[in-house]
Image (tube, rainbow, N blue to C red; front, side, top):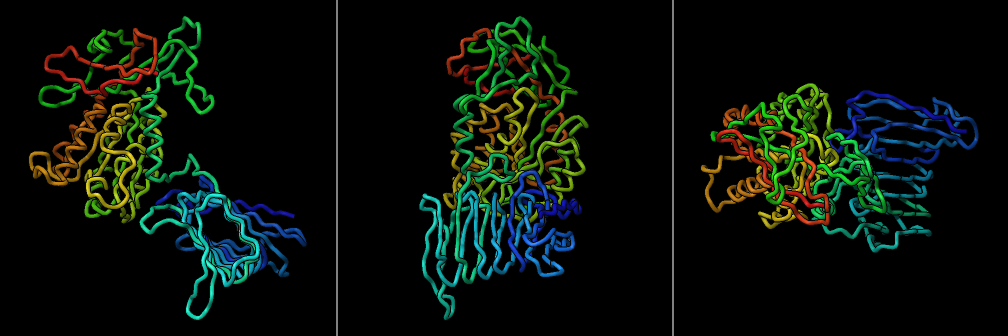
Length: 529
């Protein structure tokens, strides 16, 4: 019979995510341990016994300094199986005797030791390393069809051992890691699963499929219901999925542009209305439907580059982020993402809870790793902003701008510099890189920092945004108010194209403002699908 216990421990111990997560220690000398990794941050303990009704006292759960300790202690030594659901990102260490050990999900660090227990592992092995060590080869070994693993005989001191491990090269980057030691396991089963779409960690090379989709279809547009005479609302985004494609169910499409307007001195211009804007598509004047700014909610996503080259800037990054949070109004939402260890991670999704977000940013660990920066920018946009095409969006990238492609070492971005510029032009978001270095005029031409800055500058311009320099907090103070005003002066301009024959062609868009000396920045166009 099974007894289910759901425990709610402190938020600190069980907070989910790639950077902040509890560690679980499990000991069961009386039965099996099964683990399911939850993307929703769940923690649940279930127990069952084959001989009698399970009792809560059979398993002792205690909160320790860095996580949770779970120990099977049946009063009568009856078999007790422990079934765990743990938050994504939580490391787990398991000790058993002869009970089965199983894993289902995308693990952070999964380690286990057993005497003779059966092993069943199901994980996304394209992003998870494996090393299984036993005194001898199990009698029954079941592996996926793909040649992702290799087996060999080895020696550890004077003892023979059988090793099954992944075929990844040492420099290949993964997020998950599974390490298991056994003495005499009889059965080992390895099953594979795809990388979960909603996981808060994505491998940098996943950006390529996002890029392909983004540049194939361009920014999403909206269609009203067929044969409808009712004008659709600007914020409508209804669409249905059909055979892996996005199919819009209407005849009339709405194009939405994020537009920043500034004067000759570069100061943002506020207080504009529909009468102040002119939009031309392929040279043809369009009728503007709506212009929104001011108190219209804003989505601000912050991407922190926590690669090795920015380690000296961590305190500066945190303080810059804190100041961006102060820009947000109560109705705005802010998200925080990281590039660390060559993968993209979600620190916090879009939220209005600025206090909680500030705590998470303040607790940023001292991570490092390579810099597939272009991939991280694409993944940061795709995480949430891409799903909000008719809202006011901005992506702030706090980085030194140096992608692995500039150095020619490590794992380069799957998305090239040419690709990232093309992707930025398709985004329904303004890109604001904060360059952790001197301003353009103080950089040595031909140097890597200069090249990184210029690439940032070009990429931001493609989205309608621009780059800012912050060699020090004092320098950043000089431009902070300007950035804050500009974010608040971003306009969402929408219109229904006169040409409703969408055949996949690229359409150039030009936005002008009828104010003396005013200049408008927005993306250069869209692909009319």
